[in-house]
Image (cartoon, rainbow, N blue to C red):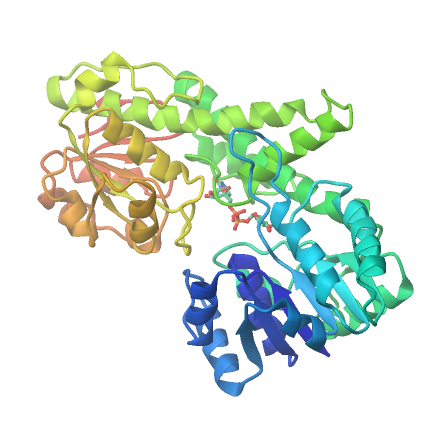
Length: 472
Ligand code: UDX
């Protein structure tokens, strides 16, 4: 079976390399010539553990090739996976479907044999049905040989674990309209099926909804614990212990209850917004309204880090705690109190990617916080093991350094915003010696406060009342 993959971003490039690993001949297509040239040389344009090795292996063996030609994929492949982006429309909540639409239309005009088109991109419910009609019309009009069918097979891969999640998924969900389509997909995923991976064959609408329901649930879990952070920050209590305690209940589970600066990335934020937009279109304005609250809770965490920075710095400079109050999450304009304290402060920013093991800074809470501090007049020294280049493209004016040590030298405050292993393993004495003031904010709750306090640090963390008297 010959497989094409349309779109060679995080999803498409991973899927193409993994399909080659499963033994198929694969042709990846992208309209971006530079991306195709890089992939053809075996170079991955983004960071994803394990993927460069797979790419080189299969490019070298000739099993994995890349092209910009729809004509080539249309005459060659039996199955065409679509892995193009469905970003948030600028200034709106809805998803921008123009790349998916264009991919289906281009395939319809170029396929010259029996084939199955399989959508993997995350789309609003109703999209596959609409594309099915578009496909049938375009095929009738094109008058080309071959019967072409559509299926939907949502992708659940996590960045940082993309290869593992593709080769050994938790479950496989396929939206199909015929036994033939299901059979073709069973052949594609024969290895996973033989290993006992749950197989859910269903209709288009369910397949589309499974993906957004999963992401909405995960986002809700994170915001749920972060809402309790807002409580423990005022009332006292330990957010980590609270998460552990409720997580022992198997109905709740401990995963995705890590309190911190919140969720970001290319999926969760835009997917919960697109879902709200879609259900409003369906006339269900109230149904997903709680997701707007989840979004707000998530964005307020960024305000909280800025506020904590003001509190910690004002305490460290003159013993009094200034506070800016927790905003509404929308604030990119710093308050006068924030500017007064932050202006000229030297702040080490540890991490700018939306999570570790990725170089992705899309909708990254860490990068947003770094930029807010900079906008308020702070001198930020940003260090991320993988994300500096992407962050610098987004916010070129921030100060970027290429080691952890350079970030903390002379700093008045250090803020851990992405929980890379390098930061978890920091030695308080080594770091303290380099800083001007021994102060730190743990915005991911991954550092044990005891050794840091023992080394003379003022330690603050999200989900904890700021209590400097406990420090030193
Ligand atoms: C997510 C889904 O997990 C995946 O199934 C889907 O296919 C794509 O979207 P991804 O965007 O790679 O994957 O990241 P994920 O690991 O889900 O983390 C999302 C964000 O939530 C990150 O910013 C992470 O730091 C944050 N997070 C996660 C928390 O703040 N707390 C947690 O407990 C877990």
